Length: 83
Image (cartoon, rainbow, N blue to C red; front, side, top):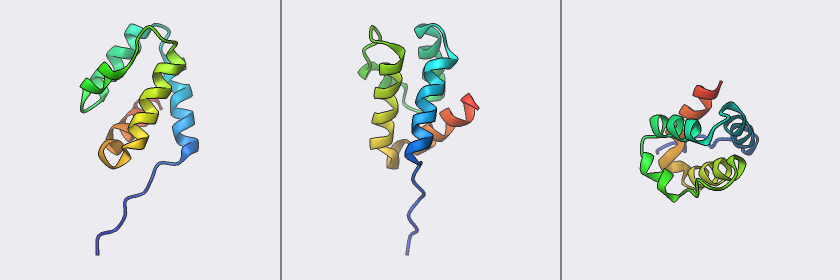
């Protein structure tokens, strides 16, 4: 019987949002970082880059978390990179 993969904790997702919003001062640097980290950078086209960084990061991480079965590796890579 296949085992269920572990789910990333909500607290870790909140910490990731806070870290991503704080690490980069400029949105263009954040966008470049995310483009290079995500396996499917086309996801970023869903983002309103005129919004605040906290909202941008929040929407992105929430989307990845809602589809964690598909994007867990991306979430883990983002966590690893900001650490």
